[in-house]
Image 1 (cartoon, chains in turn orange, yellow):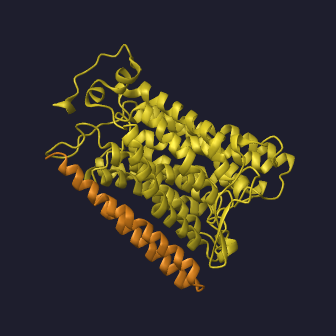
Image 2 (cartoon, rainbow over the protein chains, first blue to last red):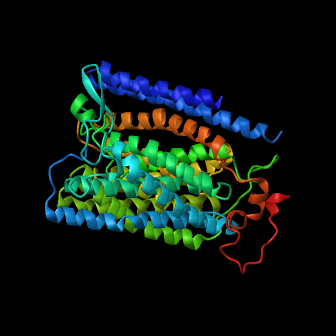
Image 3 (tube, chains in turn orange, purple):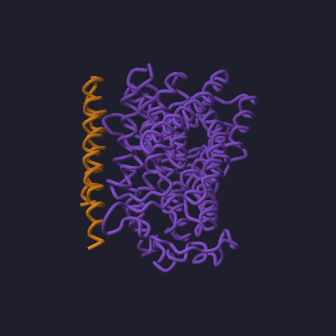
Length: 60
Length: 430
């Protein structure tokens, strides 16, 4: 689960980079870069959750 | 921001060199904080580790890493053409800092700045791995950061890489701006700290099977608070030197950079003092130190780009958020971070970078800063984690349970930092 989260994070970066290349309009660019960051936050959340589950599992 | 800028006058060169010679005080302060926040039985190993990791990082960066960071004049770099724009991905300078003596003054200072920066960055994961990370693992971590991770980050940010060129290529303000190393030093170091915590696991007894996490306070609040004061001097010098080198600030702007640094740290301390006073009934010394450091870190991102009023706001947010984040990470997210590097350096660094864009009046600067943050989280965090995961197979990060029980000093050095102390029974090993 932690690996899955960490692998989602580069996808968010690619979204942000694609926004820079594909959009000329500053508002669209900004919005898609924020979307990229949101994807990264999602991946980070999954990775943190994976860490917490692994932490609890180590006590069992 | 890049190294190949207009030549410096003798006066500016002398001033920047003087500032850089004061900057290692930031490393000394951070080392003191790392030691003070650890336990008595690991104090000597902790301080030796700080010194050893800084030494390894400086040597390897000077020999090899600086070539990829692209500070000294060399080849054209490794450039990809994407959508008709050049994406400069990696520097191609000389190995062994070759040609330093004949390099332009700006490049010489850039190399010195980055040597101090890499030494600072590698100390952050060491503080987070306190009381369980082996010395050899610390040195291996420093080597990986100095050879692979930091040179790439430094080139992209300071060496004319694609992040620095976002302004030229896409009209985003000045490009990604990080005059004081908030991204390259603090966020990279902070996410390295998170990777170390995830891989090494918590200290033994930190998260018991039942109930709340065990409090393991630092052994010497005096070291920690004195480290904060020492760090301030180094930080002011480092931020001012960064403003001269990377954003080419005029001499008249340096006083404001230093003022912003002090203001940010001071208001952050006041904010953390207030928050901990309200939450716990009394101010917490180690959390106040964390708040002070978070203010300094946030100023690294923004001090060269904002007004004093904005610096106050930036520091206040950092100071309010830091104690809450430290608590959240420990209690809710099971992250055992003795030095608080993840909240103090990674999160406050990201806030400083974001704030530099938020308070900028240049069109597109905020998007450039957001792209930088996306790169730090989307590229460097997975890179560092998987590099460390592989490294852990060859150089195990964590000491064995016996070593953790008797303390890192006795286990790794054969003697303690305080040999005349009576060793008490540790209640966390029930």
